[in-house]
Length: 69
Image 1 (cartoon, rainbow, N blue to C red):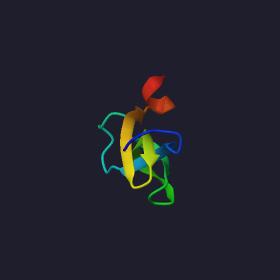
Image 2: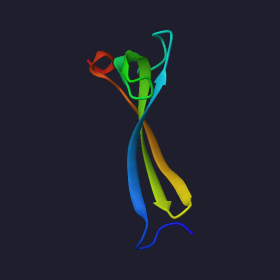
Image 3: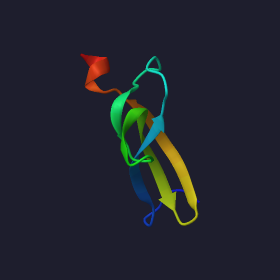
């Protein structure tokens, strides 16, 4: 059901709006769900999809410069 020649790998970003600033990775970033810049966490996901059976392969938290510098 998963994989094969007709499967595709979907790379997508997901933003979770946050009110505070103490969760790891929270910063003023563009939140696609809101259509504007807001405090949020951003994650990048990899999903293998074939027909009606998508399977999440990986999910990683993006750390903005304000967290890594």
